[in-house]
Image (cartoon, rainbow, N blue to C red):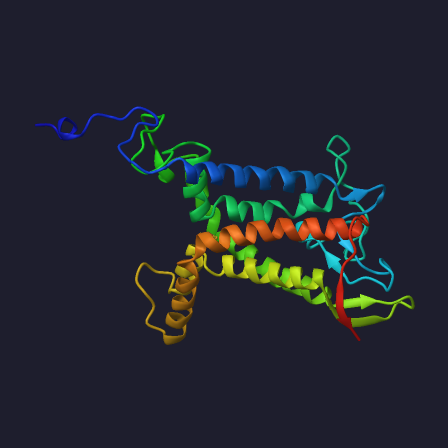
Length: 283
Ligand code: FES
């Protein structure tokens, strides 16, 4: 008897014997990702508000001077209108036929690419957006699945290279959080302090760090590179730490995704004068 003859008949799309609400998880993933993609795209295209910088809050903002808050969507800022800009306002080589330059255009492809190729996110959005399959043991709409060993999904293997860049971003965002502890007075002097925005920025760096350091590719990297576990004690300890974070990878993926968007919203609301940053203390 041929092997194919022993297989159960193929299910139609959505057909299942599962008694639970299997569609709830893909639905929430779809809504969560869609909301983030729409908001982050809007934020990337809107660096200004009435001609003023909307992604940075600081300097003499507010009654007593503001802290130095830079939106994570815009960090590091190569060109831009905040004092963080490394090379001036806008690059002279930016093609005129493209939309007006925004500093986020040069940045967002890195964290975006890192998340898009993440092993957890892949599993989640294959189900939620492509229904491939829409959930375990539920009939799918396609008859063939080429998998991640064929084009185009083989490109997902670039994840390990995005990891190297993402680790640099953890350092940059931590530095931004440190800068968020410094408040400028009317004379331009800096004072150490803690505001609500400082705490939001510190948590942003922590959550993104916990998500990045639980990466499957990082496990492989610190575990000895090869397909067998390292014997070096220091690598084995690091491997265990990464594994520990990896067991909660989904949780950190969602918390860090929500929080990075929230951090941008908070700084944008402060910068545009909609809310005032509450300062707990400053010296
Ligand atoms: S597997 Fe999720 S960040 Fe690498």
